[in-house]
Amino acid sequence: ADLTAIVDQQFYPLIRPGIEQYAKEKNLNIAVQEGTCGTANKGLSDKVIDIGGYCCPPSEADRFPGIKFHTVGIETIPILVNVKNPVTNLTLEQVRQIFQGKLFRWSDMEISPGTPGPKRIIQAVGRLHCKQRPGHWRLLLDHEDLFSPRLINVGSIKDMIAQVANNVDAIGLEELWMMKQYDKEGKVKAIAINGVAPTDIAKVASGAYPFYNTLSVTTWETEATKNPKVADLIKHLISYMDTLDSAHGVAS
Image (cartoon, one colour):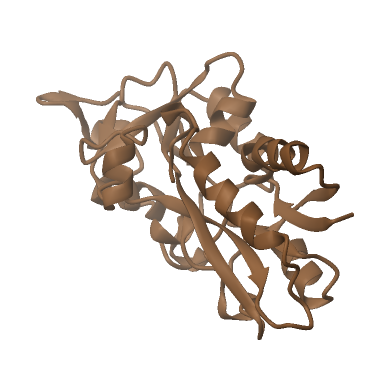
């Protein structure tokens, strides 16, 4: 291969068409493997790949000597509820109190001015992955011990979407792009936070929407490890992110 990469599973389907487009235009053989932030870390640590693709902001343990991170996009992580749930907007504080277990009935909140929610128990669902990395769910509550003991903690994106799709009282959080990948029947909806929708890309870019992932790719900067073909691919990917539909919830 001319270039090799490992890209996190959440980032992989989003960016792969851009890589394939570049490979075809430049007549390059680019080998891309779907993985996790952890496997990208290991590939770079072992010096067996040219590029690591991360969906989470890198931790100090990811910042090897000679590695440079390039942010190519900010991906919203919407708060998700069942489509039958009448809730369309919550405040940031309400969401935090729900996941802490301080608000545990929908009737503890107004779903519209003067209208309380139904008298049913809220079921919070989390996916507390990549615990050592900042961002993602840690923008909601910074440590796993802060979450309610009643939290259902799932291990996969697919399980998160399924939990919300199959329970009218569930509330979770997952990337908008991933919701669209796994909710083919339209049973899950993303709600606004403080009146800001996760699809409002201008607000996402300005920081007005509170939950997001930072999408980044790496280059080697030292003479012994860098691949001269990578820099042009990175430029292409930055431009490619500009072409994505706003429904993906990604600000380039």
